[in-house]
Length: 354
Image (cartoon, rainbow, N blue to C red; front, side):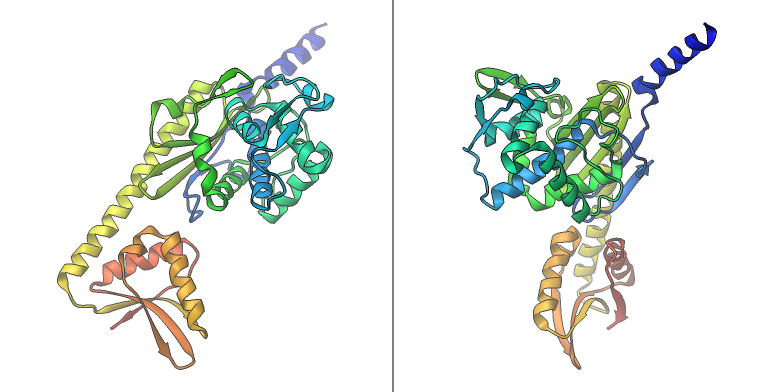
């Protein structure tokens, strides 16, 4: 009897959110620079963060014109049988693709996830195959999807770092849809739904991506912040409550958002000092290509990827058979700081004395 009681206690305790694995990643979704990480590659249940991939595929299908925002999405018997959270749409009834997107982001509707999966691929099983094909292309090395919504399944696993990479792809590949993640409420079929992401209501700088929860996963979030032109992305797995999750991710996001801004201001200050001095005695070489078109493309790439480089004049000169792109600065410290920013992004640079 005592052994049976011990087993029951263990089963109850292990299923409690308290035992969900804590994991987090904070970084820049554009440059992929990571500022903070803990257990970033630990596999866990992604819960409704699974829907980020479902949304990515919807956006990709829209871009390819395989579906349109006003298309009808009909709910099969299979879709209506999904567990909550859901809209409760009746069998053979429909909503639009646009409403499906809102329902996935705001309501985290599991029935909508299945309905859109069936519309795109015919069956949810075929859609899941597509999800895993996308995951492979994105190098989500520790992720396997088993459904379109994230309800508990032993084969539906991911990591904080993979969700960071997946969320980053939404941000970089589909910026035209980011405004949808900032919505706090939506009306579908006469019913009003409010977001689970209460941080959106408290702070203007947040652009919510997705929250998630199951008993086995704990409370999770993928959260995007924007200050000026700079993005900061935070992932948190395994909170014991929505309040705890929100407090921890908000603390981390504020810490590293301020750090990123401080770093930018420090380099910007050096830039201004360099411009005041007037002469250019150091050259930061940023590329070397045989074709001038590639040098120009690389300059545009650097400006898009590294904000501080937009403050400098980029030049191209021919040196033998190669076209060299470079930036002139007045002091060695500025050159060093710029080169460090480029190297952080796993790109090459070289400092020369003019």
